Image 1 (cartoon, rainbow, N blue to C red):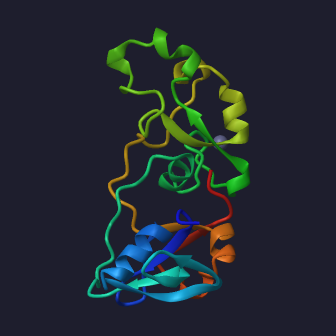
Image 2: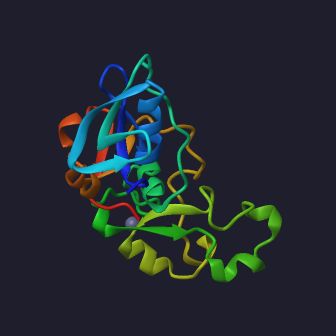
Length: 189
Ligand SMILES: [Zn+2]
């Protein structure tokens, strides 16, 4: 229960982060935040206090919207590439997209270190690809299948928005607090 996610709003009620219940309670006890939405059916008990479980908190005296470093994940590779297949250049819906290793794992060791990034599972070696292109490419190198990338893949500098799964937004009652800087996604994996 202490690890359940809690939506964190800045002082202007803009969602800026997701913390967990433990952090949210500490912030409240330090008088740095207040609970905006609680789950009244669940209570946190300790020797000295008993408070309802927070689902949404608002920070006092914090008006900024911090730019977050982008977490390396399958979903964020798809977002970096704007849901566009980096081989054929067309845009697709999430369920038609995959993430492809440019240099396949099976060929990683045969490619010279000078011609590859440091790590096969990285921003530089993974791109968003439609299922058709991914199947065509298979475990070939770019030059073997005559594919070219529409742009060079790099690590994105920052995330201008908060990514929240619809599942969590529904389960924890966050929908009414979500704002222009939130992207709701159907699934995060
Ligand atoms: Zn494609």
